[in-house]
Image (cartoon, rainbow, N blue to C red; front, top):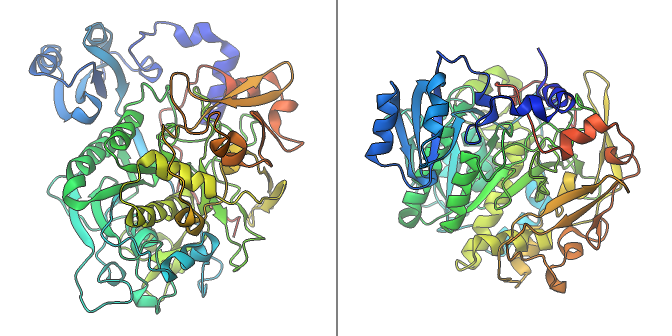
Amino acid sequence: MMSRQQIVVLAAVLGAATLCYGQHAKLSPDLESRDPEALVNVIVQYKQSPQERHIDAVLRRGGKHLRTLNVVKGAVYSIAAKELADLANDPDVAYISPDRPIKASSISWPNTSTNLSQDYKLQAVGADTAILNGYYGTGVGVAIIDSGITNKQDLHGSYLLNQTNQSRIVHSENILNPGGSTDDTYGHGTHVAGIVAGNGNQSNLVYVGVAPNANLINLVALDNIGTSSDSVVIAAIQRAIQLSNQYNIQVINLSLGRPIFESYTQDPLCQAVEAAWQAGIVVVVAAGNDGRDNSANTDGYGTITAPGNDPFVITVGAMNTENTLSTSDDRIASYSSKGPTLLDHIVKPDLVAPGNLIVSVLGDGTLPVLYPQNVTDQNYFILSGTSMATPMVSGAVALLMQQNPNLTPDQVKARLMLTASKNFPVSSVATDLTTGTSYTSYYDIFTVGAGYMNVWAALSSSATPSGTALSPVASYRPGSGTVSISDIAGQSVIWGTNSVWSNSVIWGTSLVSGNSVIWGTSVIWGTSAPASLSVIWGTSVIWGTSVPDSTIVVDGDQ
């Protein structure tokens, strides 16, 4: 079976004519190969919120209405594939895409030492200093869209003031199976919640979350193996927006992802996170765990997953603390996905944060059963991946919003990027402990973004810029083999001409020179074949229909 990157290369070789054969402008390319007689679940986005006449039009074609998603002016239907082209001809239809599978962005491997006395995640990003200075995320709501949250003791009571046993999970709702249990059936959502808001009660304050007083809104969207679909995650985002005033939801955490099939401007999952952003909620998303994927000779570049490809959101890559207090030896996790994003060439990730061998609250479900050696003293569990780095940033956002509730999502993103540490080596090497394979990582902006998050520096900053904080676009110049970055057309972007918010300030002079990106000497687009360049810088992409297994067992970066 071909890998997804091999399929991309094949598409590049076959050329644009093959990609466009029979394709309707309003139909996602991955709908073209469906059996005409087969039923397919699709998300139809309209130019306005769907009306009864839109639903009736599908019913007349033998389809079934499954769910309305007003957050993206859309609806979910089950309909025969042969009806889609005709449905797309409706002038009210903006775009039709499959209701695609999506998966949690963690990597589970058998841990070689379950006696970690400390994972140093807080110290690495200055969160320990923030907590010592009274920033606990008190009163801020963080929506965890995941596999559920088991109501454990570390999610009860106030940090350092545990007189009350009241849970800080202030709302729980099952979006995947309405009316069903909201406990964690996979073991992923509880771990994520603990990184955000665990108070360390069961570990004598050793394993504390970034915002240990924050409130949690538990929206179950993933099943007991960490999978779901676009429509369920979009419905959960929609629900978070609806509940935002009631529970002061300032952050949505999405430790999940799937391959990119079209521009973020058409992708319904991306449109949903943008709607949350516009509603005043900071959306933090995992970059993905495909940084080791070299099947298309791209050295893992171009592997950011959706919705982390959206320029609005904060997309997070994973760092390895090396289980030491000092950050001088911290390195990028070799599996952390790299930009630029496919099709749109957005500069991602935006930040990196600790994500490797992270100890957090043990939930119920499949993962602890599969990896019992990763369970520590029956209260905590070890996981790795950009899934774990993402809630580090979500917790940091909660601290910023506690300090200044008037910050806009764009100001939060800009402040975190401005104050991120930009002190990196030129490169580092990680070796897989099982296969002996070595992976070299270069510390360019497509690997580390604006840098290593420093929440205390962000709290100490008074910067409140105006405008959007859209991640910029990268452009490849074939003649010189160089890459430049620029604002997204038509947007008033924070890191424009103002010297305080210039590109070199946001990304650091070690990563950019003016608008030109600086690379390591062996980075691919200077020397690689046109086919691999086309994968990253091309304008078309074809993915396989399955979601990459983001819980594969590997031994490396440990």
